[in-house]
Image (cartoon, rainbow, N blue to C red):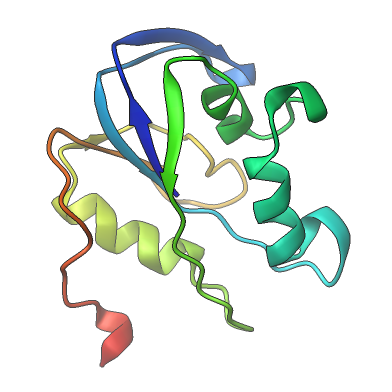
Length: 131
């Protein structure tokens, strides 16, 4: 997900507590590996694009997406039977300007699954996944 933040936000994000989000572009790496419902890819994406009034705040990303100064700009979907979330996150952290520690990564060993970019054109990088 590519998320735009129109101005600095201070937000309490569940157990992570208070986090400051600078104005700019954030890229969130998530997964939808379940077999049906809100855990499958289509269900997860549909849930995230629903207005905040139509869903409970559950995942870290919900807190950010529900904020009025945040907007979902773009989605990149990668249907796969292989878990790619952490592989992609480890690549993106290398060229992001910073990241929000432990965001979206409470069930793995990644530094984060939310990455900050001061300027963002589009993903134009050669991934190890292509090899």
